[in-house]
Figure 1 (cartoon, rainbow, N blue to C red):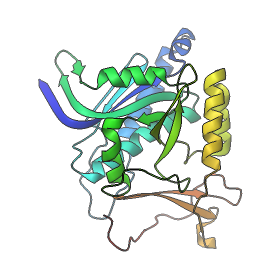
Figure 2: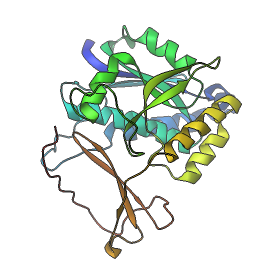
Figure 3: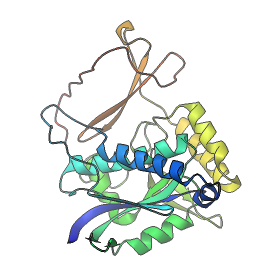
Length: 280
């Protein structure tokens, strides 16, 4: 069967240091790790709302091929699908980084054809995605020009042409992405470090080789230099003392930390968030 997904977000990710890990010989362990990460990102609920019980997945297509991962969004005429795709790709980077399996990649927008019988998948965006992914000198994910406006419209509001780096908890930031040879390009990038602890980030940085390590240190310093909005919680939330909200037009994802600002879970069975006003 040949399926054509028209006008979809497409992510192309590379597993940094993958060849060296294969040479270490633990093929089964490596497969198990990445398969579990992709499954978790595919089915995770990021911005679920009451009444939205459709069980929608975050990818219409996902494929792990040697050292690359290809992901395709659900239809982008739904803000929910766009924001959950962005969050799911960001989660993959987050999981990989804290487990010393860093990812580098890019997101674009275009058509995608999949021949399931022959396991052939094609897109007119593959050349730009593959070339730009390889140019980058860091661990992170850039949003290319074809996808930028759609993601800005869905994360923030329709018609936004430039996102100001106002707070640390934004899902995306404008950042000078480092390229091989010392050049940079000013693109939107996924904020995949926000839900990691400082120790997880430092351990992930330590795993990278020299130039990539230096550039990810710069990115981390850029993030912690931004102001962050937090809510001081009541004792009912113990051990959680602070809450941070990463908001989009379709919902919010929370981070809870203890008094030392280390991620933790509140001692509650559930937390209900009530949104006021129009999310448009």
